[in-house]
Image (cartoon, rainbow, N blue to C red; front, top):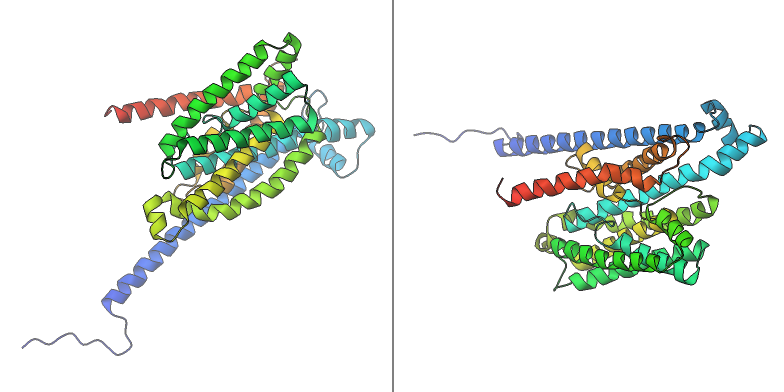
Amino acid sequence: MSRAPVVAKGAPSADQERLADAVRQVSAVRGRGLRRSLLVGAGLLAAALVMFGVSLSYGDMVMPIGKVVATLFGGGDGGSQFVVLELRLPRALLAVLVGTAFGLSGAVFQTVLRNPLASPDLIGISAGASAVAVTAALLFQVSGLALSASALTGSLVAGAAIYLLAWRQGIAGQRLVLVGIGVGMGLSSIVWYVMARSEVTDAQEAFRWLAGSLNGLSWSQVWPLLIALAVLVPLTVLAAHALRPLQLGDDAAAGLGAKVESGRLALLACATALAGVATAAAGPVGFVAFVAAPIARRLVPGRGAALPQAALTGALIVLVADFAAQHALPSVQLPVGVVTSIIGAPYLLLLLARANRVGSGG
């Protein structure tokens, strides 16, 4: 007659050992993911700081980085202070702030809507800012802070309209993207109609802004954007607590007790405002929001939305693109949006080609 195996009192059973081993494996995987996330974030931050220093030191008047640092801390002569503090520093800071805002906005949109095409410059948010800003500038001669406010208002109104038009007992990412593209095309036609009715010189200035440019910007654009991001970034971080359950789908998120629609609405509102303030400062800089998040997710796979990495990637992209826009061609300063479009347009075509192959069974 067989006997059951005797287990010593206090010794763990086989099931308990397997469970403990599984817990250790999960903890190890999470630890590796966290370490990679931190390393990637540190690397992106270091690259952005290097590019920031290069932007301050290189130009018509080349300065050693030591002199740049000394000037930033109150040293240097009058000439270096003017070049660094008044010409280059505001532009470099704007590149960082604009890239951070667009990168974070694109990451939130693409994650919440679970669609790689869900970017503010593709689904009508930037087009709303452009339509209102161009109309205000060309028809009503609005300028300065009021013009920035009109661009922000345009993005928020466009975002609200797209959300309401896409609402069908809830929001589906595919439907919102299609509605946004349609709304964006309609708003773009308004922009070109207003420009066609305007004087040539005014239309040329509006076209420069529509290309997305940091040329000629100063501290008067830095401070409003900095204050806006000081409010919006913490709000986005707070709202991002709803991202993890939303990534599982509406039914699963609701089953976990998440407030699906309110969480999604808060995230989309933050992302819309981020895109709006960035557009108000520098114009609709194309494709930064579109490409920053996918690059960040590839650098840290399995980390969800990768919001910090997407923000740093956006800042690095705009810094590099603006440096190229200033120095790629002799005696010519291109709008930064031209360079970012050169980067982003091929990626969009590649994404559409892949989607077409999947859709056709290829």
